Image (cartoon, rainbow, N blue to C red; front, side, top):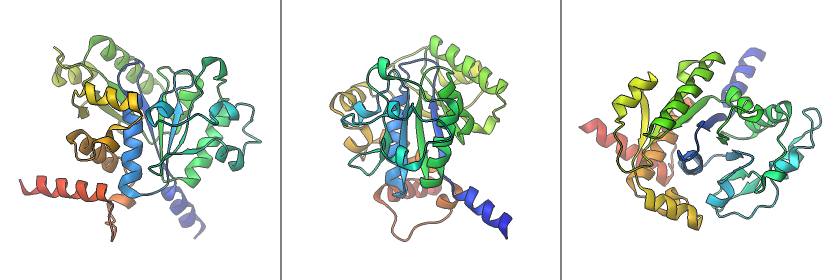
Length: 282
């Protein structure tokens, strides 16, 4: 009976999804913000977004949220003395219902958390939340490695240009050396440029990995979303790209959610069901 309870408790823990790239400008923060909002809207369950890009965090800006307390306020804690009261003190809430912990604005304030402290914090959050989305720095620093190691899925974001492909290849090589299983890695192509000689087929051949999601080019709308702090998904709820974020959130959801249709599904989930039914009829 105890083993069954432990298994059920493990099953009910949050799913942690890490967004990563070794090259900036690929749209990681945009993906993290919109995926987190999509997940929150889809299941209307406790979801938190963690900005772990400590020296260049964009999450608070994209959510148009004032910075009150950040990860920097937890840097003084060791793994042994951090508790949920301390963690709650740095959690902010967006009007959508999404919780988030921002990164500090100034690099001079960006004291990294010790990897043991971050690992303990993530494990505590996994007990309290259904979904955790992390936006990581474009490095393999200790905080990034800690989050990647604990993550259930890693979304590796690549742009259709050579420097980004090389960075993705380097990341994949590191993931392999760290022993991450293939199913943990999901390759996402973000068409940040309108035209490119690098087709999806060429990118897949170069990286020896299939692209599971392509975000079409829509630079003007994404830039406007960032400038005004109005996330794409909230500003354009019926847009095709919003549908991609919603379906990605559904695909990354825990099996217990996907297999159990709620009696009163959210508007977001209704849209996903409608699109899935339409495709099945074709």
